[in-house]
Length: 431
Image 1 (tube, helix red, strand yellow):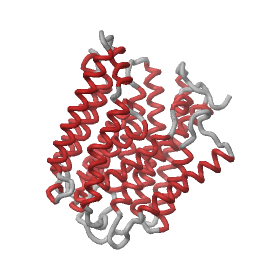
Image 2 (spheres, one colour; image 1 turned 30 degrees about the vertical axis):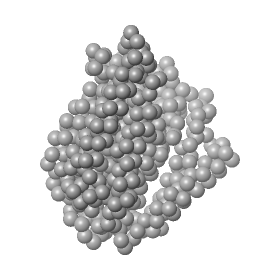
Image 3 (tube, helix red, strand yellow; image 1 turned 45 degrees about the vertical axis):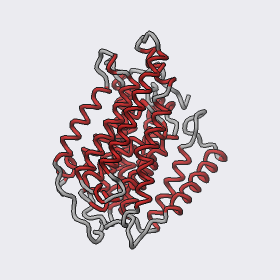
């Protein structure tokens, strides 16, 4: 596939989908919000794949990858973003580089597990119990040694669970390497590169946005950047490979269980945690509602009724445990509807229909329309077959891109302090 075709027809749609969803996730937050956003990005990859074996296992693949992406949601980064708004080079470069690490952990875990699910073949079946046990052990040991014992704090006094994610990522990488999952390992590295650079670059864009004086949700721009570049990296890792091997046969029970999580449990958790009474009453007060409590109750009820209709409609349309689900058209529709559902939740929390001003919330719909146009016609992905070889030099190519990204971040840090603007809520890590 030509580089231009790869970008326009594969990478760009995934970047738009994950970027939009990650920005919408900003209204909800935490692991559950990141999991839904990641699910949208992975759905886009499967919809564009033209692979029946991936369609047949869609619920399982999406849930595994989405949970792995979402695990990074436990990392605290609020103060680190503040470091990127400081006045001196040391604090700014530290803040941007730490955001690169945090974003890379999102991408490595999410992209690696997604690609591992795609690499699960009859000849080389994945031992999922071993994978997650080793990741848990690696996360606990890394946190225990570097945080509890050595006290190498990234963002005191906030949570240092970045170390747990780092240990889990190292354990995952070691599992992929020693078991010959080269495709998955390569995808993990490029996904980490995209999400890591996107997070650091997004913090720079946020600072430049505040410097401009333009009133906009610049925090949202940073979130979009993380998802957009993370989506580009994951899509490149997957679609730049000539031919993935055929995966294991779908399991009806596993598909049905994963579908319940994807269409029922995950949305319910997001509704409970994101569209709760406290959140909606706060929204009501922000728009000067005469009765914030009634406002909260009414919109909670609307969201629950609408979401139940989405759950029922998608389940009957897609039929995840049957052969009828295996089509590009149905998977594309599922992807667009699932993203639209998430955007509506974000819109409701922000009450954009009651605020007469343009915001990033409106741009989500523009992104959705562009995504629909890009996904309407897409060239076929190479047929399944024997696993094609990857150049043994791919680690060196990935390393060069990583070095270029880090150099770019250091240059952007210098540009940031040269502008002269310092945000009032800037944080200081080093005096």
